[in-house]
Amino acid sequence: MDNKLKTKVTYEISRLDHFINEAKPLINQCISQKPGFIEITSAATVLHSFYNGIESIGIMLLKSINENIPNQDQWHKRVFKLIFGENVRGINIIRNDLKILMSMYLDFRHIIRYAYGPEYDWDIMEILVLNLLETWEKIKIDFEIFIDNN
Image (cartoon, rainbow, N blue to C red; front, side, top):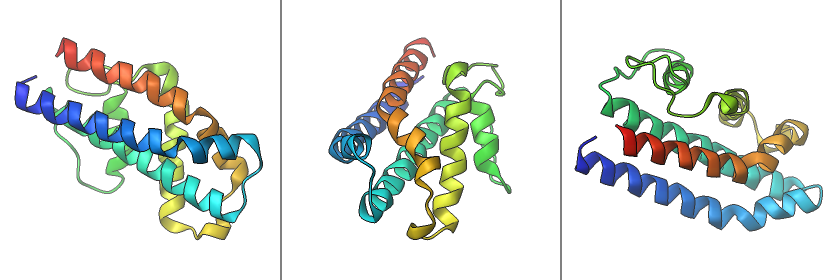
């Protein structure tokens, strides 16, 4: 990976890291007590931004290995598969044990784009909110490993 791209990816990781740190009070509040409408709506935005950030960084890393990034219908699902090893080099950018959980974040990305706040289902969101901090720490390590090895 060239230094310019490495700097850009590192910067994006720091931006997402800062965002998640800013969201910790909301995440902790949602963990400690059942959230109301305002907290659920805010948490939905956090989940959406979290997945979008992961995907954006993943795309940059895929480009670094000369992967062709799709732009047709359902390209988000295709990028997801590329990040999990279905790319030109067969490299998992994110470890496989996070694949199921990350697919849930991807699915929620679709929900937030097409539903209204009162329609968000806390039962679906709860597992994503509860796992966000730990998931981010693991993915951040995976990104750093990828950067160091490519």
